[in-house]
Amino acid sequence: MFRQGLACILLASCAVSAELAAGPHDVLSPQLLERGTLLVDLDFEEELSTESWNLKGDWSHQTGGLRYRSTDQKVVFGPKIRSAAFPLPIGDLIMELSFSWHEQTERVQVVFNDEDGHALVLEFRDDFHSLMKWKEREPLTAFTEYPDVAGSSLKAAEMMTLMIEIRGEDVLARINDENFLVGSAARFARKLIPLQVCFQGGEGRLHSYKIWTGRELDKTGSALLEWQARRNERPPFQSAASQGFLYAEKVAALRSQLRESADHDYADLIQRLEERMRAMKDAYWFYGVSSKNRRAHAERQRAINEDPRYRSLTSELKKLQNEELFYIFSVDAELVDIAPKGLRAAYLRTATKK
Image 1 (tube, rainbow, N blue to C red):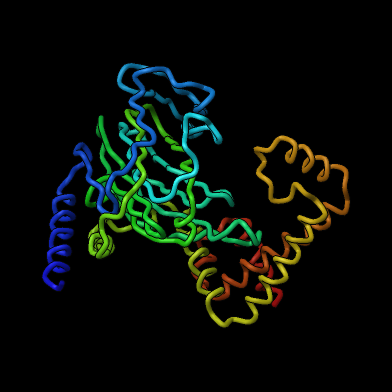
Image 2 (cartoon, helix red, strand yellow; image 1 turned 90 degrees about the vertical axis):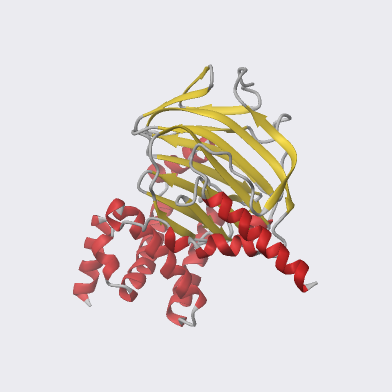
């Protein structure tokens, strides 16, 4: 049994080592899962059905893939929910995208949903990469977290492949040995809905889009451990690349630390914040609903213009939200220097009064 287990580990290690030599043009092999049933296989040789697929932004069907043009706004591609052409939901999966990456390309983003809404956002950029997750939709104060962040070494290429594997609570997304993300979250173990693929910056092509069900491959866990061990070999995250992201990532990390600690003052603050948010939700059904919901957006605008109670409650809630952020600033004073200008000024005014 020991020899058999050792052989499995050695084989997994060899598979990962071979994979790590792959470049952006090479075919990637799954590391955590075996390919099961092929659920979606698009090479864009034919026009897409608008009844089954969403195309938001400047897209056009051309030989060799879907061509996009993006300036300030990202372009979005994905299945329409409850589409007969897309089997939903699915559990363990392998998703593979092939696309072009040009000098003007800023990022490619893949968003997954579950029954509670957004669960996972994977983002590969020309300056850094990130894995962002939400714990739960409820309570309303379910803040985002960043299980993995890394620098980028992506260069322009006519054909680049991104493979995403989600197995239980684990996720591995990679383009090559330097540009990959690895992490875990409880919500990954749910039935997931691949929601959308987004591109921003310049022009490019989405060449193919494939999704398979996944069958367990890495039973020893050695492949995942090896990718985790290689995190420090990736290009380092350069804080100068995005001060805004650095601020968001640090706030998310401190929120997680404070919630898991025995900090009673912070726990009391979060409880008051949650109670106020629930009161808002009970009084105004549209509170917390996406602005993309036209009815919710219209009701929100009406309340802002015509309902003094709504304006008063939102003002009180904003004060509590700032109080929570200011508490975090008191834990890490360096955050103040990279905070948004208006928030930094408000905190400094409050600190001066004390």
